[in-house]
Length: 282
Length: 56
Image (cartoon, rainbow over all chains, first blue to last red; front, side, top):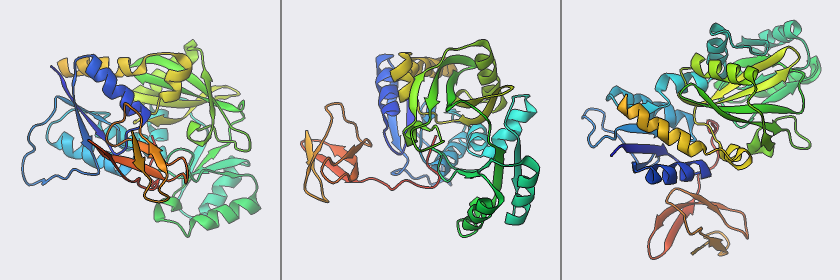
């Protein structure tokens, strides 16, 4: 029997679905609460599982625990390198570009004054994003020099991570983006995420509405290539419908998929657990 | 199953299929709680506040 460690800090609907599916498929599930564990790294780890699924909400907990387990030869999905790249928008964009995946025009700068120079080059409107962060948190539209200066100034009073000014063109798109799921290099399904009233961000965590999205060739191709670019084994790929085609703006390594299951009817937990079982046998 | 909200003493509903680690919310005051243990009674504790590094 395959033993699966599910590393979590909170049990969301996704984790419940995965745990139930794993048990249905005869997998022995061990729940690992990241908030309660500790490791004496001078000693070797004991009672390890065949494979671990990293599902922590906290990015820093996630990458550190994954690194530690991998250092003890454990298999963790997604891997440390994938998590490290996906958790940082700059690293993700560079990986996507290197692999020929279309992305929005992007620049990075390291001071307020150079960020303003970037804006002169990319133009307005643009978008300022923290390199680390999710759910649309602290993403700000930069519509003109005056308001941009105010937003950039406000970041100077936050943690130094927010002094990395990752700036992206504001892609002209319909009021939605697309989230697709890729498991083991296979496109599983996709949804449109419509922006809610009074917000331009489409994150369902912010009230974005989900609808099924057909798996057309371009979407499948871009999604699979984006997953490959980050060596992602189970990832959510976010892209926008730009004027010249799809552009990828994010790859999620601990993907939330409850809305995908709800609107597409696809049994995503089954696809994930089946893959983990295959992965153990590789 | 139900638990008592430590904040307002409202009744927090615990789903039948609840598992330890799951987040539940008090319907009266809106406070979020994490299920700490499930036995003859359900023990809940205040959930962590969303961190800057939380997400997908």
